[in-house]
Length: 77
Image 1 (spheres, helix red, strand yellow):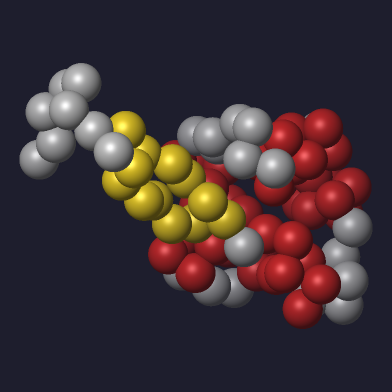
Image 2: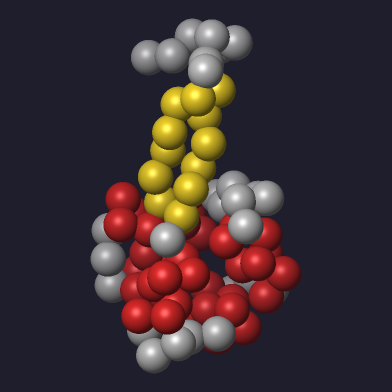
């Protein structure tokens, strides 16, 4: 377990690649399938916004893959 204040992390994702691999799904289509705005998908793709755990699972479900296939977390020090 990481103690508070000792290390920072960054969530990265493969959403853009997964969209491309799924018949070039648009951000709008993904947003509609997950019940969020296109702007939310844009922000998540650009790592400007971290999705809720529920939304992260919904995104993985849309692509038919595991959470770990969509998102990863790296500790940066």
